[in-house]
Image (cartoon, rainbow, N blue to C red; front, side, top):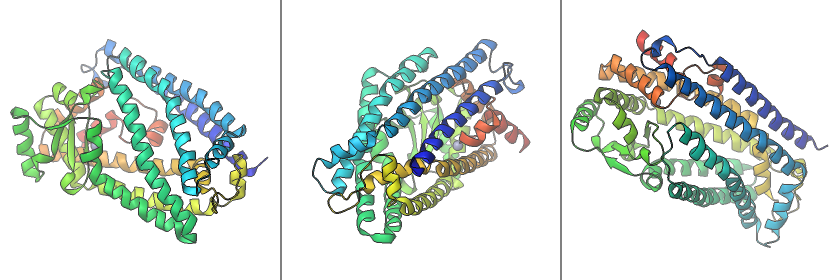
Length: 416
Ligand SMILES: [Zn+2]
């Protein structure tokens, strides 16, 4: 048996089993008794509902992966990639176009496979708990828009990388890294203004008590009110949220309309202060830095494996040249399977940094807004409204949580 094939199938199975273990631990860790902090905030019925929501979601995730893993492994072992590659080659185009056809088919196929799961999650699971507000037409439009965006943006980037790797010799990884970094920076500027509005409406805050409270806080912080927007989150879900995005002139703090509806003005100023904290403490820049470094590492390791014939044989793809160049489009995809352990380690590191940033933004919010109690109250309301799991297993938090569990956040704020 091919060495790469053995490693890759082993990795897929290991990752699956490990994930099942983590989910089971996480379910068992859920406490049926309401934690002290939340007595009086959660009533017994609503708390039981949050536990059921966790169970339903976990069950659905496990069902999805249990179905998808055998399909993926069978597709690899039965030579599915080879069939798609032969079809792409039969177009008689050069290597880059062949690569775009190859990747395009796989992306469209995987999106089509995901549609039923997505429908179930939105219209059955989320609906059951009263979260869903998505109309079927919005759902269809979302699917199409994201597919087109992936194909266009992904296609341009993929073609660029293929061009470098087929023509730039041993420095291809460096050129690809620089090019992808450049695109990443352009997207940070462009996405809030040109891409996000494709999915949601962003409007400046209306005049009134909230705008006054927010502008008096933002003025003190030197954050222009022009950068604060309300988003129609209610178009898809009753869930509440807020986020900070972008750089420089196009930086934005976004508050969901659902959040504005459910929270007091003091709580909303607290949420805003937390987002301003992310801005002042340069968390976006730090996040970008680490993602640039990790993509450099990825391209370098990719360059070591991309020409290994064994990698192509593992996926039953002919390593013979296409239009004078090796079929590196396929090698890049196969490398993705090999890279999962490293990307998992990097994401653990990235999540840990993100959780640290959340504590820092909380401390910043409390110190600058001066409303400790209402900030804690706001966090609690946010967890209850979204039926968040109050007691996740520490291993689940370590591996996947970009935000600390709510009880840990409250504890840290009380201590400060
Ligand atoms: Zn945050």
